[in-house]
Image (tube, rainbow, N blue to C red):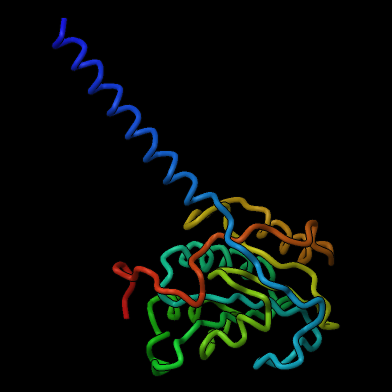
Length: 202
């Protein structure tokens, strides 16, 4: 009888541990990151030329955030359907004490390989701050007149590709001339923060 109680107790502890671990993983993957103050018009001091003749999409990214790979794959899908309607930039954070080469990871190369996308180094995240981005993968979309059309993420969770509100909103602009939502949650590492880069090439 005592042995049965011990087995039952051990089983209960195991279930609680597994359930708790699953909850923590799910919460981490689906909890949106905070967003800063996104300007309603193209920031005057942004180190990018303002939109001219077509909309400009800017993604702010940490070059060593594993979550950002999914964001770049989603950006690739968007650009494949956008054609000439969008010009896109990916600004990769670089710490102030590091050379530009620090940002040239495989995520940089992935961004550079997307037709219509230009990667840039963002020293100390200056431009991320000007666009109100705190988390890697945040996107801002400004119209040809420099007016904010959309801001947010383009994944359904941390590192998760697939149908999501951000992608749908941007493609609505491409298709109809107006996004069907003004914003979407962002899922990613903090831009000004240490992230694990075990799986990323330098």
